[in-house]
Image 1 (cartoon, rainbow, N blue to C red):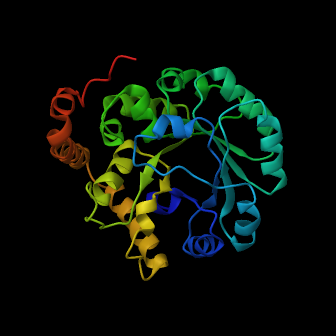
Image 2 (cartoon, one colour):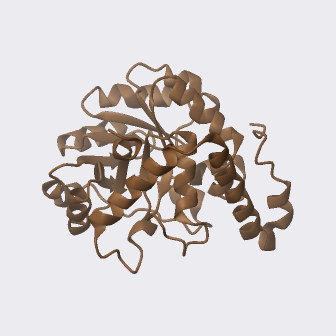
Length: 287
């Protein structure tokens, strides 16, 4: 197996047709994003997608999956978490991701509620959870941690999720997860060779290889218009690109990191010049 073929790809969708296409194309996890509690308040000023998925979407998606595992991102830990997780497991969900938690206690409660009935993934996207990353990695039952970039940048007070992606803060957090022997997930990626985005998709994918991430999300930009004519070929191309990048030397990765920093400064200088330029990419911020 290779780095690209081993990369775990996850797609959020409640569209059965898209789920079927993605399953045939080799996406590893497919399912719904139920996270709604508190998310609109946190991200209302951003141009980020906030899911309107419902648990009933699992009924539509599940029959379309022949290879992929049925997936769900649940709500943050709340009063009805036990009942919510019971319903997800009962619907056949094999992988459950916990978003926006701050304490080790919340992560431990989530692991207890899942109770080995599904594979649990901790989504670290707050300063508090990142600061406690070593303790989180020691929780029995934890074997995979994903770093969410959008909420993390809000928690840090940084201009964009790209600033997080190139930071030493992220590199350090990722290293702790990898050194604990856990699967590391980071952010999301678009189509290989898609250079029409404000930040080229390949430049983002290169950071996954630099950080040695073993999992990532399939971003909405992957399926943006015009839709790829051969989705299978697009996913093969993406995995091939991961293979290519994983074999590059350290100086190449350092160069791609610098290239992304330049791109970020160009994008943010017009509207947020002082803040973007004053932000240190190299030094972890005080948390």
